[in-house]
Image 1 (cartoon, rainbow, N blue to C red):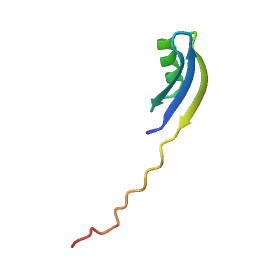
Image 2: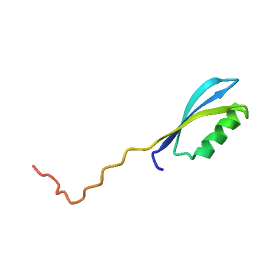
Image 3: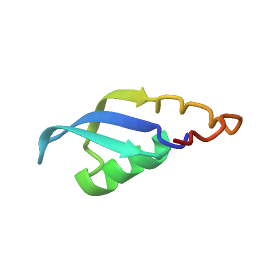
Image 4: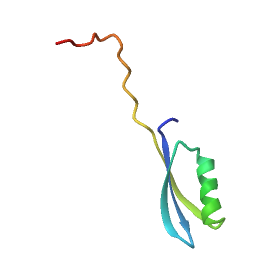
Length: 67
């Protein structure tokens, strides 16, 4: 989950439509954060998961270049 993020779009009567991105956070924690700030009348529209691109493996077998 390191480097992943969740994008949540929601509607709140006070704020209108809002899109927030939560890096390295679980879905329920992100929703609880929205409900705490926007109120219980906030309605979740979409939830998207963005996975971090894989990191290339570290190559230790390459000899260092000398000039």
